[in-house]
Image (cartoon, rainbow, N blue to C red):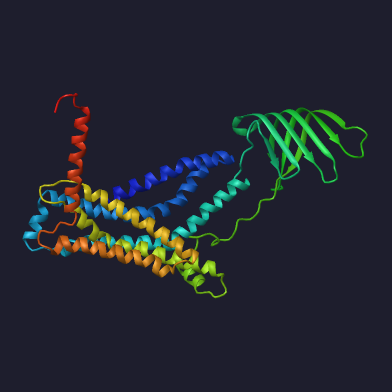
Length: 386
């Protein structure tokens, strides 16, 4: 339960952080609110790729911390059960979730990221039915300008309409109307604006003076601007699957910069998955507090270490993509250092008599807490008293 609870909570926090920015972006582009949920759904695999390792580590850590604080761990150790024996079931979870994470980052996330960028493109281009903002001049292509003063009934009834159209031969058409509504036609590239109670002004270089026409009903055809097709998948980092990354990185015809980016992204995904196989050892090493201590310092350190390692990998991927450092060196060197640190923490706990890998940090934080409490007491104590 701690594993799945942590996974859900971490995913929700990341989604909430992004949700506000997506609502603002969709509102500025005038798109429908429903597209926000589609954008968030395409972001979930990216968030799960980080949430799954954190959930796995905290699930194992909290389970071992619970049996350590209740002295059950001492009983298991007394009857001859080693930490390696106790870690068999956690490693089953680790292998299973590592395969799930590999499928997400290697095959699912590239498609969802491309779909996310596609939705953003459609919002900007108006393909998702972006609405005309009330009280502002909206341009349809280079030759049509429109302004709506008031909108009612979900945009079906328009009031205070102004339209100006410019033709290539210099003719202009200006229309004002009290009311209007948009109607669909058989041609997907054309819509009809049905106007009521207005004035039409038609001008041309051939006319001595503009022609003015008052009307009670008038249908004005509007040609919708052509929407460019969205680019192909793979033009941005992270949109290729693992087999595609391997193929591009080994293709001599590909640009050198693209090959560097593909190699860096390939190794980044592998080290992120490989790191999950070290998390059970890290969780156990940080879960067992010193005797007569119930400090949760290990929980805090575990999150800091995983997030810091993830950020180091992102920086190393960037360096490898620029070609400054070989991606193999840039990404696997931190992994080996991280693995050595975790193995030392685990070996100290499991094989060194009386070993406590975070004991020194526990004592250091304890002394720091006492010093801060004394300082706070001195500031709040009356003057003249000791």
